[in-house]
Length: 395
Image 1 (cartoon, rainbow, N blue to C red):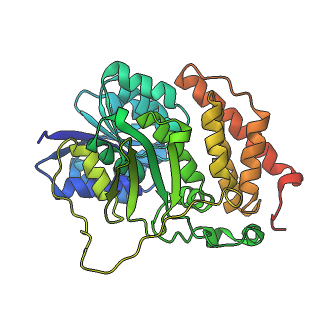
Image 2 (tube, rainbow, N blue to C red):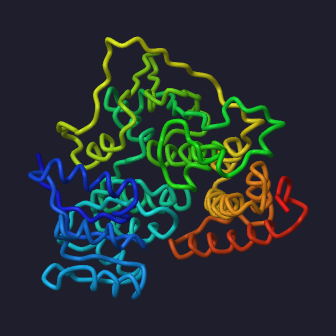
């Protein structure tokens, strides 16, 4: 099995911390070259002391100063600051593998740069494909990079597709837990609070992705990602609600066979798979006990109650900058909902109206993607500020 040297973007987040646990469990397989983190400097200091990275990137000078004070002088690695430093460590020749787990477009430029340098990329940054899928996949193909999805559904699809040739696959089925409101009547949705929406029934995640799971927007993003990762058309990607979250993805082949990927709800398995593919290694995750009685449910999502999933399909079909606008507007709308400026159903209204007000011309570079993203955020903030869409807002 190949020994890999890793750069981890977002090391103090959930995916980053789980990545480092995989490294901890397999020291003979992995070495850490660089870490990049946000403002959890205390946790970052612990990671530095344990994994001894050569380089660490922080968002600002204040973080660098704090970290320098916390660490013993003999343990301080090279400390860099800013987005250009994220690119620098992502393309550094000392590292062959990038774990891209920074949330948001902050990770887009560095991930694209790693693809342009032919790196293996464990992709947990949705924005790289949702906002810039065409550019990202072109960079992967042109530079013979390896893009292995970490998201449990796409990672499951990647595993299922090993059962046959891609041209033999006719449908990709992505499963969704349904979130905390899968049984909530439509008439009650605008009365739910941020606290209600943050109670995910299966996964423990950050605030934005948890709200996106409650609206099924997260599943919409996964549909867009799946299109770019595997080449399925929108009509060949189906979403089914599976509350037990044991089956992560299924692939239907032309002979009618359906291959499913099943595992415990532990992100360390897909993370390790992305790092060791095409090999497999023993993973520190619970195994399924098949002697225990269990029942699995599957049913179609309600697109009337959760219109953002339908909107994601629409933007994928529209092409151009539509999905970039979708992502940016959703992030602003989720922020507004968490701040109680709009109600739960107001999230979809903000996103839809932003899409209607923005041109959808195809971005030709990552710089243009970031420009579209910035403008979409401005438009979405203006829409949030308009009283006409603040349905369900408090005060």
